[in-house]
Image (tube, rainbow, N blue to C red; front, side, top):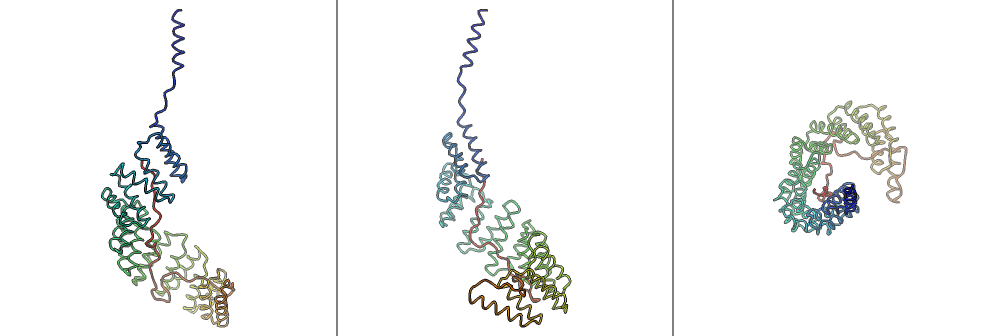
Length: 379
């Protein structure tokens, strides 16, 4: 019985012990994970709050400068981001991604020499980093070194996870096309597709280049592929129709135009059907197609001009003259375009018109840098 009071005392002493304080390093890790989750969710202010707590709890965490830099970069706070990344590079000079970020920010700030210095370091550490290679391409382009820029874009395309490489191949093709080197752009895209860099825009641009080269049958296949890959875009089917018309296949041309209209009802495609019907002596079909054009009219200047030309072909010269007069009056006054029952739609896109190749490369992003892809902070 004497042991009972002693046992009770021991239990009371055990219950009065103070709980072990939490480990600051573990707490910091928790806040780091919260910050990364907030960053990925687009909540940048909450991410910075969490990273601030990490800094307070574990000032020696070598990841925190780069993590804050990512948040500031995507928020457009370039100079603050640069300060963080440069600090991170001093703490961990072997991390290539940090040097790549420094190069990108320096490029955005117009400091190309400093950007190239950081970029050389980034590529030395990670030669196939697609973001650094894309920055390299833009720096080479800024110096007028087109071949080097194209080579860098191609390397970036091969390094980036699919399907993003297709967009970089379009950038490279755009550089060549802009320098009047369309044949090389055609070869580049063809080879890129063989390596898996395929998208609807690549197929359509390839078709434009093939039209420009006079390879209509090849362009036909490319536009049909583009139509499959871009089911919401009416233009590839319209271009297929233009090629069939140029090749003397009116039935196939009409079918392709109707596929385009199924995607989007546009007056310009109805007008193409009018022209096709008139070219083959089908007056009734032409009149029906013109009614469809009127119903799809949006009233742009290009539509009015196309309508006037179509009215001329239909033998309605007075109506055509009235449309042109309306257009001249509107141009003179700067007022809104007239909405007329005799008025169909917008001009056709690049392709084959009047039976002759009129191709051209679809516009690709110019030399201005694209929005930088910002990755989640490194673990």
